[in-house]
Amino acid sequence: MSRITWDKPLYEPYTSNPYTHETIALSRFIFGFVIPFLLIIVCYTIIICRLRASHMTKSSKPFKIMTVLILTFFLCWLPYHTFVLIELYHSSNLNEVVTQGLRIGTTVATANSFLNPVLYAFMGNDFRKNFKSSILSKIENAIGEEGRTMSRYLSRSSSVDAKASTHI
Image 1 (tube, rainbow, N blue to C red):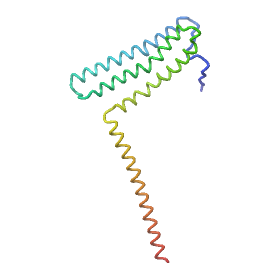
Image 2 (spheres, rainbow, N blue to C red):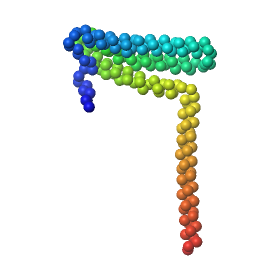
Image 3 (cartoon, rainbow, N blue to C red):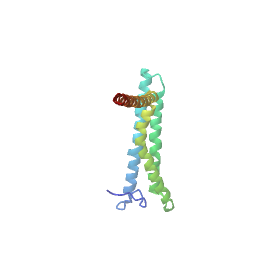
Image 4 (spheres, rainbow, N blue to C red):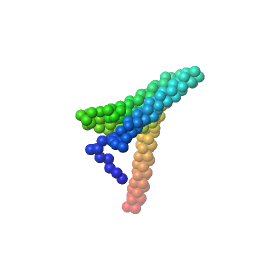
């Protein structure tokens, strides 16, 4: 298993062909950010139009969820791709800034994978109500279990006391 060392740059210096690094960085930007972002916008726009046309939803919650998901993708991936593109043309005095920016951008971009399901769950229908009822039912079960355990203990101790008093 290889270890990540932070003293090396996060990018690979492609020395065999000076245009290879530029081609890869631009390809990542186009295929990893621009096209997915446009597809997300187009798909959610189609969904919104169909929801409005069919009057399937009376609340604005689905529209808010879609807007937040689009913004989350944009805000999580933009720093990474910005620093990848800056890295192509940076001067040597910006090397530390670009390296730190790539580290932060990579971390934030990775967070997008975690944030999507969380956003769906927290913004989903009746999440708060279901969460509250779930927590309350767990507490009630725990208290009920505690009560049943305590009553079993008390009934055992009273039966032991009763046996002890009859044997004296």
